[in-house]
Amino acid sequence: MSFDLFANHNAGEREAIGPAAVVLRGFALTGVADVLAAIDTVVRCAPPRHMITPGGHAMSAALTNCGPLGWASDRRGYRYTGIDPQSGLPWPPMPPALTALAASAAEAAGFPHFAPDACLVNHYAPGTRMGLHQDRDEQDLDAPIVSVSLGMTATFLFGGLRRTDPSVRIRLEHGDVVVWGGPDRLRFHGVAPVRGHAHPLVGERRINLTFRKAG
Ligand code: MD3
Ligand code: FE
Image (cartoon, rainbow, N blue to C red; front, side, top):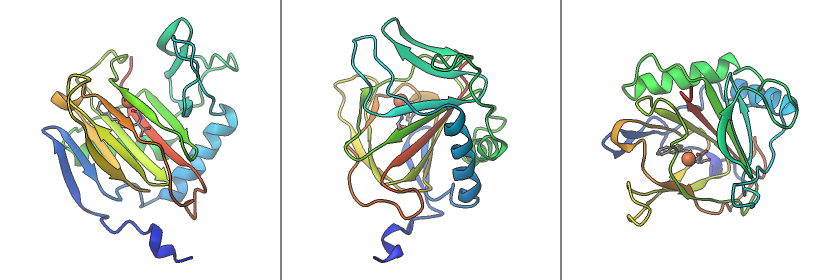
């Protein structure tokens, strides 16, 4: 099979998808081996797991975190915690390769001095999806969110400020980074079921990192 199938042909391009949301195509490809090694270290300490929503359903994506704060969900609700509820230990530290990638992407998108205190690590097996939702559990809604897509390609659904607003579909490939801030921060968003070919480096899965200022 040709590796060209997985080349990021748009690397280096910037696409505005909102007044304060931009896709930086292939931004994470430089140093991606260090980023994947850093994720391996995190998942060995805090394995991804299907958290239970307050409604009692297991989430489709498997989630873990690194950094001082991590997002967790159970029957009682959603919250950021300093402790991994599964191990009783602090979340693994945010590896320097990840912190540096988040800060440089934010700066490239016009948000200098981004200092995330939480990094959510979502694992998508084939068929995994994420329904439309808003991210509003963070204290500082003025800080941007930086998202890094790795592995299998996904279709990101980007809606409006109301659940019923129409969504646009955006293909996110291995190495693409998206930065969202300002008026786009509270837009509904989700991920269509992941399907397609295994990625030659990452395998039959998609990994998404989202860096936030949560506390
Ligand atoms: C747009 N993750 O973890 S990342 C999530 O690909 C989440 O795993 C998706 O939505 C994923 O909450 C999408 C991009 C993302 C994250 C937060 C946003 C997009 C956003 C907040 C506001 C608008
Ligand atoms: Fe989200």
